[in-house]
Length: 243
Image (cartoon, rainbow, N blue to C red; front, side, top):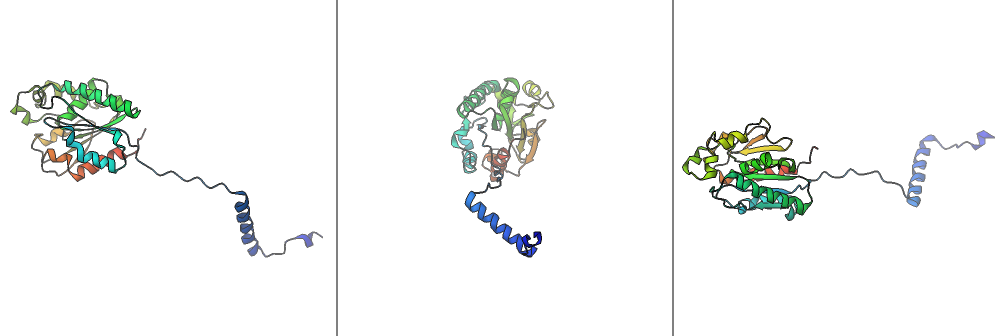
């Protein structure tokens, strides 16, 4: 009797039939779909832009446009306006203004940490805020563009307080560079050009603990409009956090 109840359909035909039955069951009852891995997207961490001597927030317009094109909401991008911007006040004064701008950006966006992109003297003001005023834990990534971290001989041309501080081997710079890892766990980059005639010598743009990228850009101020520098800045800050 048992032999009469056995399926006599060849095994080669049973598999397609089973698949057909399964498909019909899915059509009627619905089947759970396999989870799809989410796409990797930039975090769009808020970015604070800090200008240098004799400059204004507009120096960063081209770069900020690139960030918006890459998906950053406009409200997560802020270029601080430092006053006075001519070097007539010590760098510490600018650092307090940066602290206020950074806290304002964090409050508006609800972000725990922000990224900072600073240029020229603005890199020193930013570092003073991070290192001496407690700002470092608030900064995820810091990109220094053509910053005179070990001074510039061009600073001897004027005797304004901030310029005196930017002279090679000044007391201010010795204190700022006393640590081998001055920015703690903040990820730091130094973008600079060997053709810089404002930061002299150009290698002064290097500083301890920072990853380096050099760009063949003909002049100091052109670093902020160079497509290569802008692209590298956006790409660096678009990377997901490692922590």
